[in-house]
Image 1 (cartoon, one colour):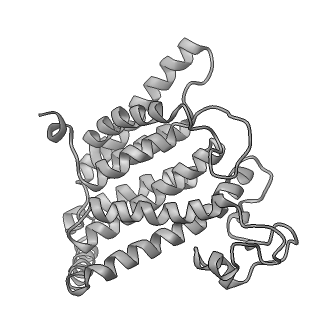
Image 2 (spheres, rainbow, N blue to C red; image 1 turned 90 degrees about the vertical axis):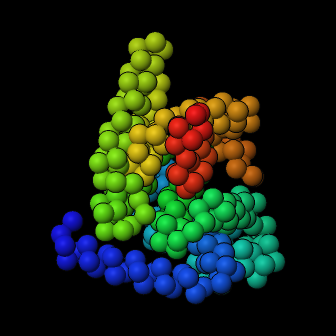
Length: 290
């Protein structure tokens, strides 16, 4: 990173530090919860439209346009109807035209986003710049987990977005950004990709079919970019355990109100569940097993 750009990053980090230092804890919590509600609101659209885009049933622009519509009558929803949770209270739990109750999955996704950010604030106390970075990480992880849970897909836009934001954050680490060092990020991403590629290859040879989706490779590589090789090791260990623990009830589309038949159990939610505390709290294998 050039000296001029590094100076610019450093100045903005100092400003963010000073701003965060004067903010009361309630304001930080409020901002984090609002961010979570916005992420959760976007998730209600993502779980329905992203799979359709991947399967070619909708154009790529469908994620942003057209806006949300009332399911029974097809009329565009007004701004106040789309407000996270507040829109639900405004409409008294029913869609814009009042013909049907708002599906429980929408409420669960929005509330889930807020819950994830509350956990993130708890796990990553300290400097405002570090917390902001972790809230971004948590938001992308949450979207990946719920889309994978609902459809079995891990969209490249999210996995590669998570990977590149981690690498970019590491590039600014020498300028003071609280991220892993650039070399650690690159090695972590490469290690995560190669380990998953090896596991997938062995699984395919043993089972005679694809054993691990490429989206899982990219997700683990992204975790490596954010936390280095140590984070990859811990996420693979605890993510696998989490996925196994959730297997009895975790199924594709296992969101409230979904009645589709069970399918292959996705690996993404388990990986995301493990990655959030490991990266946000900066856990390492030496801390856990020494």
